[in-house]
Length: 207
Image (cartoon, rainbow, N blue to C red; front, side, top):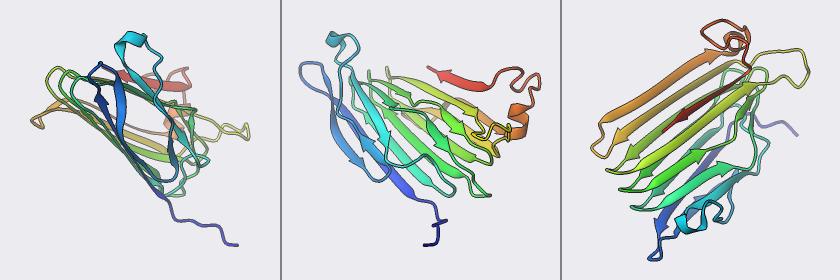
């Protein structure tokens, strides 16, 4: 059988709401391959009502040409923590990087923590991440993004390119914060001062 070269399109849509007792629950969930949504758990201070949801992947990571869309909304007053069960491996791109678009909407007085595990970029991997956050008055969002390069063969071959863009807007669509990064695997692994230096893993936190 020939090996398929076309990327896949996956989508995930989650909606959180707060019940009359103050506990957050998943009021809406829709997922296509490769996403799987685990049931909400309540791990953080039981009286806070915060829902923790783990996302799982049914595939072996992100492949060339993949196009994924993630949409998460928190209704007013809801509190949610969304993470993944493991790191995501990003495979060789061959000129067609995997792309992921994340749209987060946080209602008035709500809190959303979006903290996926790190992306592991294999040799030749390419990844384009676009994250757009919309905050209503009194809302808060915690964003965590991390990555590292890894060559399973041990030769130190670099990934191709990583391109990330985060925009935070208010409920009127005005830009309030932005963070943009584009780096090649060669620059990432070179140990250059002002790029990575001696570090081998990069993480960014926005609150």
